[in-house]
Image (cartoon, rainbow, N blue to C red; front, side):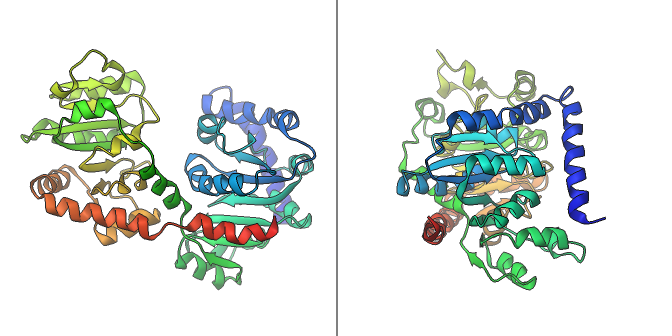
Length: 413
């Protein structure tokens, strides 16, 4: 049985199965119901006589990588309309109103009928996929129609199917891309090892994105009051494994340190669990009004959208997810020139691997390692400053990926 035929059967079966799961799982329900609206949304918002650029991302992280490119396309090609599609609800639901695109929608499932209908409707002049998104039917049809298609901020590893003896079907999908912009030399070498020469080491566009943070206004009045000039640890996007280590340290430390915890899960029950485990004076962001914040030791951020600015007040940052769930964004605190602590599972995150090797990010594996490292950084400002400078210099020296990509793809517009 040809693999493409089998793939099409599996995609259709998956779509049927997702309809069933949608009755029980809210996130899957969004995944299914949102896709039912895609075609009507495109018909309503697209201008038929305007040239279109289409970018597809998986979720929020890939959107952040694509955003510097979208912003430059917006500026340089104001007469084009931009269609942005998401695979995941966690990206779409947060960014569905972004001004970076004219239309934001879920990507219809990769069935033959959906692909034909979608491309007939948007008629893209140029297509950009971000990082990992490889959809065989979409890519085959784009190639057949002669539409320039690019994969940007891509990163490859030997463990991926493209480099296995049985990976021919997916390797053929890679052959549909006009050009690859990869994050590192290793990715380029891997692609060349299977016969691809249309590859440029362009870097990671997220570094362009985070470098822009410093140009904005990062002041937060409540953080000014809370920090009150004291040493401050900001722990962002934490999970229970991270919080156990943080709580142990906070409860035992004797030094005058301020702590900010921004948990990944901000449901009241979870925030209450953190609060009740702490033996210091705790205030929640949602309950900060009419309180003298300088009198509190711990501030819990039980909202979304302000963590980046909160990092600007940190003397040390801890980024969660490195124990089980997947490391969160280390670039946002790095841009502020502060040392960063993470859990032990950071492999596969290139920027974290780079900065661990350089010494700006330090992985810890347990309470003891965390406590010892914090003791070192609190007691030795020069060491903390040196590690922070490694992080900020890394970002400064690696910006420009979006401009390099635009210089190339502009030849097709």
